[in-house]
Image 1 (spheres, rainbow, N blue to C red):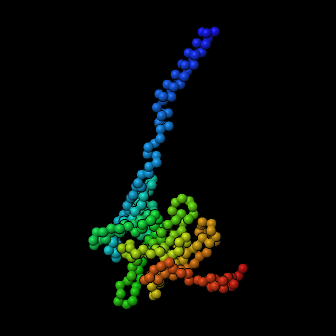
Image 2: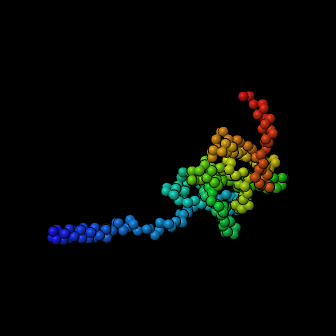
Image 3: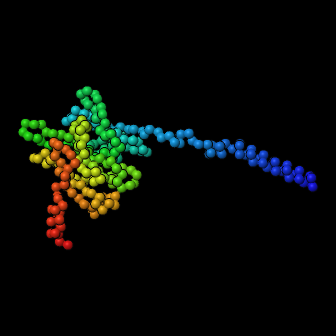
Length: 241
């Protein structure tokens, strides 16, 4: 009886010792449980610069700025895909303006956004005055469709700046999307067609309301709609249903 009890104790101790040894000697177990010291740290984004943009009508050189993700770096650097290096084709997160005269540089935006389009525009002023030139931007500022990224499905807000990229002014309402635009030389005005998410479904579709707004280029600010509510009601009365 005593020998059986002793044998059971020996077997139990042997099994416990083996289990303890297997846990302590398995290097993968320790690595799996050990916290990663760098797991909570976020590395700085890999900033990449597009091709130098030169316009003889401006005293400033422009450098598009983006962040590398996957094959995007190659596309941005070598001019393929959406990064063609031509005005209105590059879609950077920011733009550096570099003065040809004094060598000073500054960035266009001081916030996170995507520059969906930008073009150099001009209109003729009174006789004897040089043409007025300015940059027109379509900027995506908010993830309005909720897909956790800034893309062409989101609202695009209109801005203009001088040739130096300074004096940036918003000219279309937030949470709207620019459809098209025209510069009317004779009155120094810009007319922009916008679409509002009038049904609040976080998308811009043919079901939403469109409008035209007018901007005074010499004194830019968010434009006012040129079709009043009263005029729209009159139009609706004469629509054949």
